[in-house]
Image (cartoon, rainbow, N blue to C red):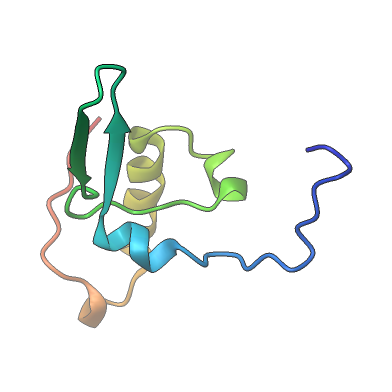
Length: 86
């Protein structure tokens, strides 16, 4: 980041709920036409904070870590879980 950028009054997660609900991308083409594309996160998508993403760069690493935690959960909190080996 450049020194002239001032984020002192920024709000972390300000657009999180809107992003989770989906958004529209507007593309203005050179020929004068406009294209609108609706974008929605996939069902079950989880947004990781940047400091967590550094440790879990892909879905496989996240799933592997969470599978290790499942046996530590109290049995009454466990739901039906299909554990894949791999």
